[in-house]
Amino acid sequence: MKRSEINQIIKEMEALAAKNGFHLPPFCHWTPEEWKEKGHEYDEIRDNMLGWDITDFGRGDFNTCGFGLITLRNGNQHNPKYKKVYAEKLLFMRDGMMAPMHFHWFKSEDIINRGGGTLQIKIYQDDGAGGLSDEDVVINADGRSYAAPAGSYVTLHPGESVTLWPHQYHEFHAVPGTGSILIGEVSQCNDDNTDNRFYEPAGRFPEIEEDEAPYRLLCNEYPPAEEEKSFLLD
Image (cartoon, rainbow, N blue to C red; front, side, top):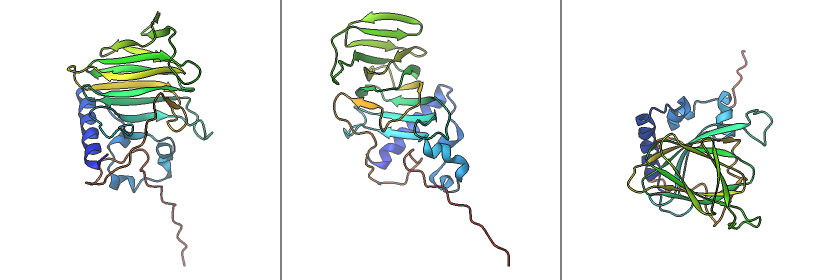
């Protein structure tokens, strides 16, 4: 992806969040220059990959397939220093976009339409061998539990949500003509390096063509904290 495209996506997501009254934490607004001054007191952000994350899943066409994401809070299953057992994300999709079919090995999550257009999620159960089962799926949506045929769509208007369980394949669609969508995710700890199983091979973190300066750093671009210097008096 081009840096200019990433910058534009971030600005669009900021504007949609503001329009819907969703206030972002301070670290989402830091410039690359400000990040250079952040010490070890902000290691939780670095170690748990909080902040901005833009992906086109390796397809090279964000207008068709991808997510803008912000990890707002997260624990860390691999580092006992961090005790949180939960995570929260904010996601962004332009009108007409999709995100490819995948499930999580361990993570349960609630997906919430926070504002904007209409979201549809296509759901299958894993068949145990990585494929799509033809068995009915159990849908848990805003307190209602019901069985639906494999491959059913759950439609979420602003304020509505659905729970997605481990090994439950899901594919996101921003319904064309309804507008860009702000999506919430509340879940167990998130680990995008080990917990995602895509039905078809997909990239996760894009290679970036630096055609302009970054507006915000992505969560895998933070500079390390400088070690505190000690000064000896003569």
